[in-house]
Length: 115
Length: 114
Image 1: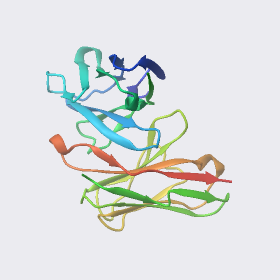
Image 2: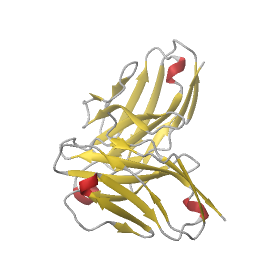
Image 3: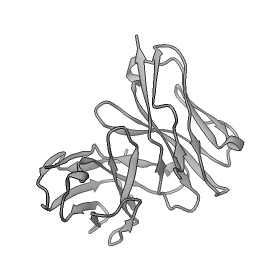
Image 4: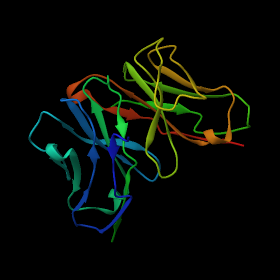
């Protein structure tokens, strides 16, 4: 069974609006770490934001924020005031507490931001 | 910021040939990883390493070997390349805990096996 699932394969939005990308994960660990990465059209993969399972406050970095719903094993990525350059593939990922930095990735969500 | 480089960036190989993909990182991370990414899919872990001299199997190790001769270098070796190994390969490095706990990716290597 896949540990990280992203059900939205593609999303299209108009720039300056807010978009939410969904992600659910599966783990039996009490401590785990959740990440979102962005892959640009050039193929570059960059880390965006993370959420530690023991933290109740949702993480925020710039115009990226997370909607962490622990009882639902869900970690949504919210991008506010989207820009054309936000167009990319977004990957959700998880590291379990004892996995020594090994990360499991979802299949990604393609975001297209239109003018 | 961590710097991870890969070589070659593009490679065309013949079926049955040997292919070596190289990765170098300059941030002194202990852990390094090799992933493959196929069209429309996420990243699948092939091999990883906790430090020089160590290699571990990931989720899809069959047909691949790995070598970690030093802290900085991590190679992926396809002894007998097959067309099914045509893919984009990413190397990553990562280390530590807390705020340092993330992975930094190289630019990727496009491999075509004919």
